[in-house]
Length: 200
Image (cartoon, rainbow, N blue to C red; front, side):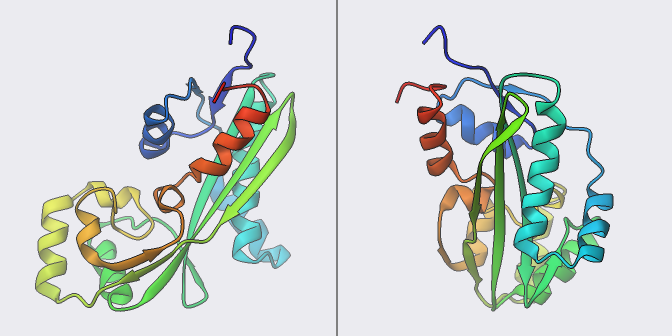
């Protein structure tokens, strides 16, 4: 497919790169220059729900890079929702432990938003909401997990990585596995096929 459009992932996320690479999708990486805190504050002022906020973040990342290229640009964002509240990535191991203590034995949702642009315009959006049910964990189990995983889990909003040792923390997961990791792969592949970016 010599005439296939270029694909750019507007993200510095290692797991999103790994997902596309494993599916043998040809892509480049361009990190967007977006201040997420400003977007989140504006979203609060505008009264956005968490799904709309996740999409606003995905769109901002996508459009920042799309303004510089005519390639297909993929922007994505993920927000953790627990009991109606949004959570950012923990900034310390102490905060990570508090997150796991709070969410153990309960269910939470990961809101995964994807926005795709071509020729400077958004052509596609996708939202997924996988549900994750964490098993009841003792403090000793949480401490052992954190000791085994630090500091990698600070890159995850839930303070876990289900593709690694984090799988041991859960009772079950309902929904798309790739959406849990941070990029809903199957609907994205369908879009890339329709756009002629991949053959199959």
